Image: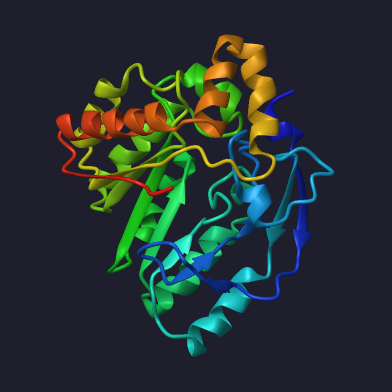
Length: 275
């Protein structure tokens, strides 16, 4: 059964829309959904939102359908700042086509011209170009973990194919919307091939910056990743265990090499995220 078809949706009532963000460059966090239908095996959001795990990650998504109303109220009283949309969920996951919570929140933010920074793995972000382009301060980030769509299928089964994300970068560029790429988490032994062409295309699409991030071993992550590695690439399991639970020197070097590849491709601003 297709990953999207298996996801169950439920509407919930949120108590607030905006929360303070500790992420660099963001003042506020806005998450239109709880859970994510992309079902990425490496995602650390379940630990952050205290997901109870009774259903597999990605099988249940809760839509915070009253969020636009709450947001409209909060924008009138909170200090203006940059809003990160999708810090522990994906704002353009499949649920968005049903509920449009993200779009309705954008409408509220646009009325008051609050700066926005969107991060997503979904090419459907282009459906909101008409709104995003009207913000005076905006940025859209597309996440990639590899140039290999086969890897995407078994690590992030509900996310947009790599080619669709690349085309979305082109659509955003054509609309004069600044973009960045979040490359991560870096999966050793799985991501190294094809990066020259991938970053080269991103440079052609005028991507402003690339952030390279590591695999973060929050509770539950290895328990989801390891069985898939055993199934698909069992020879890599010892290497992952050495990197994640032993000496990280080789992994740190891999992060540096990926960043160097992006720079050689023509992307001037490349940052390796701190542990």
